Length: 76
Image (cartoon, rainbow, N blue to C red; front, side, top):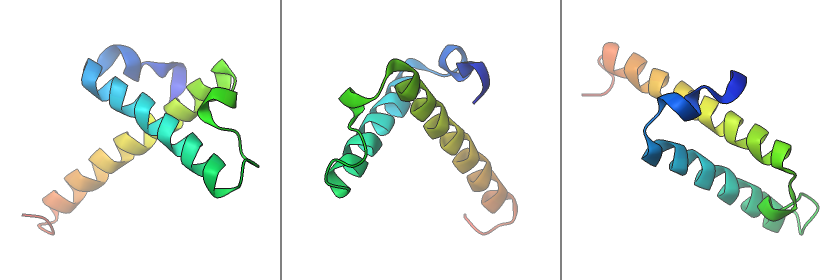
């Protein structure tokens, strides 16, 4: 997500959830690849920020997808 505007606009709990999800994702990918992919601690600050931005984008897409499904009557 561009310029991490979401960090200033979202509630603190949601920002924390994005950051923790990004950390878990990095660590799980590292474990699954036997360390071929870096763990959260091995990522640079920029890489951590980029991963968190990607997770935030997924959260936004998920919100939109849920709204679309509700609008179509596929979720009640």
